[in-house]
Image (cartoon, rainbow, N blue to C red; front, side, top):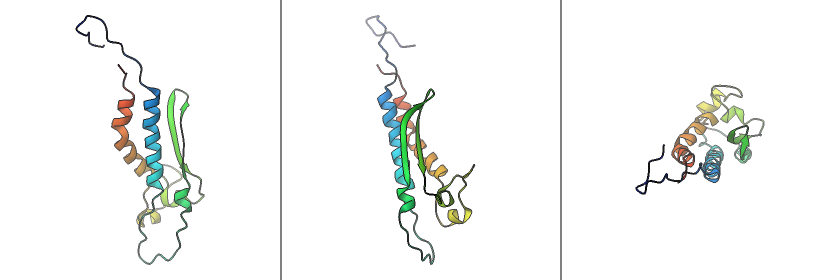
Length: 129
């Protein structure tokens, strides 16, 4: 319940700003795309040529309304993307060999990005005065 101001009238409280929530989720999506686009350092005697195709394959859709949720989708449509950067807890899974070569799962980076942006996300969901 909103506290009564000194003049005895209820303070006017407005619902959270949709624009603020969209901005917060956009920041999460863009940050995740940027981080997933970076390659780890080559290890050992790797003699293959990196083309950058995997990094350029990361895209973001949204934020958009899905049911009652505001969502952002981040993904990669390069067919071999799951091998170096796949999931840890479900399919498509990251290859253990690629993890051993320094590639980080999208799941791990996604959790880091959300944790870093959590304060902004929560702030965007607060009622406005």
